[in-house]
Image (cartoon, rainbow, N blue to C red; front, side):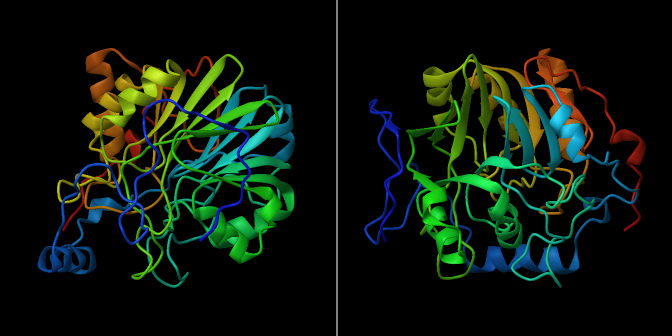
Length: 348
């Protein structure tokens, strides 16, 4: 496999690039837990036949529709949560999307798999021109093929970890639009510096391609403003190193959802998400990877309940905007607990 050389600069400090196994597949630096066949089968059976009813909201999630004109009129350095890990940022007068997922299901097929709790607040057709899309890895709840293809005509750049860009090119995205980075490599686009930083996760879209592509988090620098996008990750020492190199961050967008003690390496418990934010030297935490898809066994509102309580106990600033509402990146005041009126006691 070859990777296009579209890297404008390379961070050459002491931390090594993404490690690989002897077969060329990417791997995490630390040893990961292995579930084994019978444990994996047990989890699959529980997902299929014994899911708690409160993993899906019984009342509609509040969504605030967005128009293109509202986006054009929005002040610079603002963002909009569109759902799950999809965030629209306006930086240096341009629009950026993280992990755009607009399909009804986060699945290889649209007749089965995790279904959205809510519609996106704006359609792809109504979005303004997108300067760049930042992709953290190739799982279906982060890399939506249909969305990528629909966005291609209005998007100038796709910033991806190694190998993910090759998927896009195979789907028909022009190679000249794709920039692929390993960990600690950076590129400059339209006045922004984008750095692919380590994450502890895995990749793959089928049974045969596990870890053939890289996963990453990202640092987004707009002059004196810094934003961190975690993608998916278990908790690991890399957050401290990212914070040391690139912190403090005005805003950290950190995954807080789809966790379970049975897969501790690849998703963080809320306590770990908060610790990652602290390690990163973040000023305000925006919890993402929640409120849109049913991907675990916890109550759909559990990530919001736990992370806000933890932040309150530590007196740390947190932003929990409703889907579609604007958020000021530099002064993000959005601490309303919008989910609490939707919480009902399920009957099993």
